Amino acid sequence: MMDQALTVKDQIHIEAPLSKVWEVLVAPKYIRQWDELPSDFGDYYLEQGRVIDWSGRSRLTVTAHEPNELLKLSLYVDKWEQSPASYDIAYHYRLSEQDGGVLLQLEVGDFAVLEDGRNYYDASLDFVKTAMEKIKNLAENRL
Image (cartoon, rainbow, N blue to C red; front, top):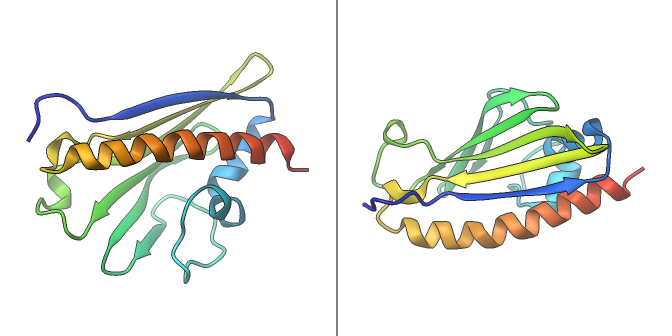
């Protein structure tokens, strides 16, 4: 275990209405353009309690859902030795109106509780940068 936090934090300003940015975060037809979803995941909007399950690999559960404000997806990976109760590793998407647009803040982690946490942290750095740009483009360019 590591003493330092392994949490990826980033933010981006999006020139779009709050409702459009939220739609890009919770609608599967948009999520598939900025992140992976299991092939058998239906066209279900993300809502409190919704589970995205990659059978035998990992699972994301919507554990906080405040429309146009906060979306939290808690992560569980089957090969992690710790029980899910012993950590709180999640994707936090926070939205706020700012300067005529939306400030999207994304936080992923904390991976410090994992033995190979540095690898997950490094992979999340790439994910966050790419996903934020795609979310921005989708929100700003969709009709």
